[in-house]
Image (cartoon, helix red, strand yellow):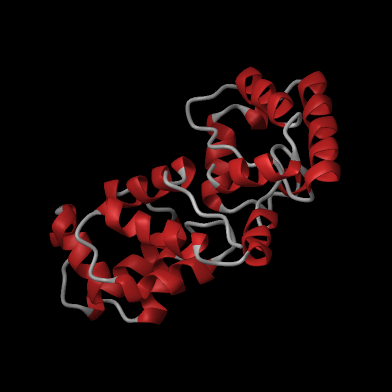
Length: 203
């Protein structure tokens, strides 16, 4: 049975809201301006949220996925599955469609989504392989400025968490500092696997 939830993922909601507020990374900007040109909307028009929604609602599936495929970490299939729910009347409606697309998958696909995330202050961060959004989120929480002791603690938590649950620790880091993240990390490590699967998918 797939895991179904009543509340939307707070971390992905933030990404969707920031997208509509105009905080696009370079890749998104390129896709977005290419997309709006296809539907006859000018750069001046996109300052209006309604016009942004109109542009997205008018996109074909490929353009929609190219633009929004990165909202769920390395999982463009979420955007692809959400496209058929257009037209979206609001930002919340778009986000809810994406969450529903995840919820209606089986546990194997949901686990695949969880495993697509990078560890906090992990090897991908060290090698500079994080997505733009993930890099910004981790930097915003100060995870790129860990002391040697904090870094060692996070590496130990990453290893213990992955060994127990089989996927990386996922949390909406916005608004948290390093100490708060470590505290949440340690607390959730005490969960049983079923509880933590639900927690991670809802993060």
